[in-house]
Amino acid sequence: MTTRHIAIGCDHRGLELKEKVKDILCSKGYSYKDFGCYTEESVDYPDIAELVCKSINNGESDSGILICSTGAGMSIAANKVNGIRAVLCFDSFLALRARQHNNANVLCLASSVNHDSIQDIVTSFMEGVFEGDRHQRRIDKIKAIESRNRQAC
Image (cartoon, rainbow, N blue to C red; front, side, top):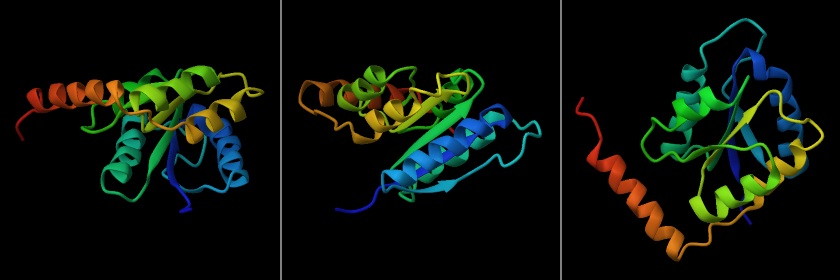
């Protein structure tokens, strides 16, 4: 089995949780690339989200994890990148269903998420398998929406 490679990033508010998530990824045998930030100095989360999402789209990473204060900003920014299906999850059920039904490729987390549940959330997302079938039809419709609404450069 090939090791999955994960792109991970955070803003200054997500730094502590990012380090914990990196430990979880290592303990589960995943490799990762950390796209920042690396200090508690204020940064703009859209910059980090774009780097992580580009890593997925160019094939460097299989999926991504983004962390900011609420998780909402990272989710919004990530979902602006074509081909990205980012979800904000607060529990393992949501994380699992996001993979099974939506084939989500980016997990977004709030830095305030219960740190006792973070291992279950990350594990559920990483180990969840897309079920295809009727769910693929829905993913295809999402892709069609992206295509119809792609802005000209």
